[in-house]
View 1: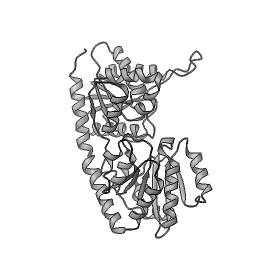
View 2: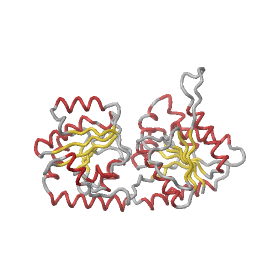
View 3: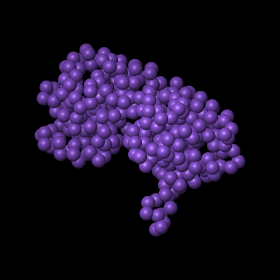
View 4: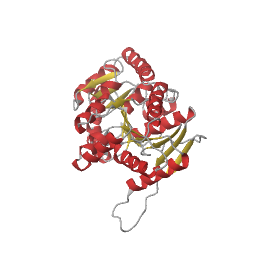
Length: 376
C-alpha cells in the first residue's frame, strides 16, 4: 500500500509517533511518503520504501503570513498524483486535515481517502479557539476515518465538537528494541555521584507541563534523598525554570540538557520520571520512561491513567499536588525492593499493552477500510 503521512517534523509527540509509524510500515513493505516543511527529526535512516516531500512556502510581499496550508495542500496533491497514493494519513486536525481535504479536490482521477489522527493540542488548545471551532469540526467530520490516541481525548473531542463521527482509539506505541534499559555507567557518573538518585523530566516546556511543579517535587525529594534532576527539552517556560532553580539554590543539582533526539541512555540512568502535567492527551514521555524501566510520578490528567498503572508502574496524584508527589517519590526511592518491582512492572506493561506490532496492525486495518471507499 502507498501511504502519505503528514506530520510536524519537530520534537513533539505527534511527530515522533507519525515518523515511527511510517518507519514500521516501511519495514513491512508499504511505500511511505512523508510530507512536511522539513524532514522529520526521527527520519534518520535510508529505506527504499521511504520518501520525503518538502513543502515549500511562497515568500511573496502580498502575503503578510506565509500560506502554509495552501502550500501543504498543493504538495499533498502533487505527491498523491506522482506516487499514486492509496491513502493520506494526517497527524493533527489543524492544519493538516484541512489541507488534505483540499488536496482531495486536486486529485481528479480517483478518490483520495484521508485518515486523521488526533493527538491532543489540535483539540484541547487549537480546537477551543472560537475562530477554529467550525473548521476543526469540519476536518473531523469530512475525514474518512478518525483516530485518537486515548479514550480521554476521544471523549473530549466528541463533547467539544458535538459530533457523532466514529472515532477509533489507537494508542501510541514504542519499539521495544529501541526503548529498553541499557547500561550507561559513564553517563551516570557524569550526572550523579555515588548513592545519588536521578530524576528526569522530558517535555516541550510549555505551561501545561507545569515545570514549576517538576522543580518543586525535586526540591522536596532532594531534601530527603541526595538527587539530581535532568531537564530534557526546551520551550517558552525554560527561562522561568532556570530562574526558579537558581532561586532555590539548586543550580548545581539540576541539569538543563535542551532538546535531545535520543533519550534512551538518559532514561536508562534515571530512577524516576516526573510528569505533573495539567493535561496530557496520552503521555508518550511516560510510556518511553516505563519501557526503559523508569517508574513515573504523574498527575491524574487526561490520558495518563490509560498509560500508567496506578501503584504498579508509577503513581498518579491530583494536578498541582507537588508535596504529595514528592512524598510518593521519596517513599519509592527509599525502598530498593519496591523500586525494583515497579521498574520491572513498568517495562513489562509498556511492552505488552503498547506493543508496536498490534498497533501497526490496527492502523493497517483502518487504511484497508478507507482505501476501498469510493467517492461519496
